[in-house]
Image (cartoon, rainbow, N blue to C red; front, side, top):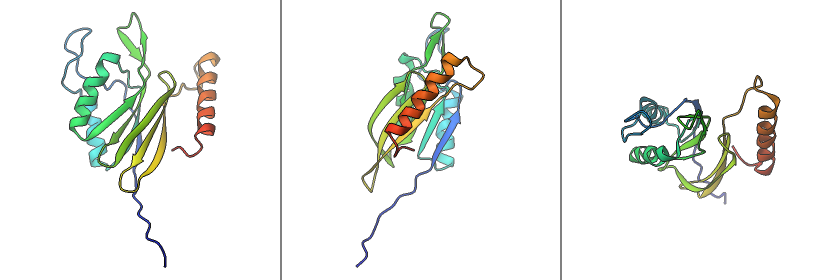
Length: 168
């Protein structure tokens, strides 16, 4: 007798979305209302039936992450991210990468930053079939950057894909 196999289709996406922080209240403070870009991500995921999406160039501040997570949780989504790198006396944050996922389809297991602001590995369980997947989310420097920025980042990504050869 053939065995029944339960499978679920997942739709993954990627989006370069410079700055998905919450709206600013003051010059250096962050509010509790979502920015247009935070709304955009929830709409794209809902309308495109996307279950997990890598967001690059997030420009997250540490203090902003929990507020953004709270907003996304209210939409049935969650986020795991690396914090961007502060520039210009910490008034501006560059880089950062995140994985936003649908909590109705995926359950969080773990995440690990491989390279600050650049490479994140998130392990999730696909609900309904109890299968785990690892997703490598990246925000990589382009080849026009200096050698000392480009090569270490690409070497780390190469190593991560070898260590996690079953990753997406």
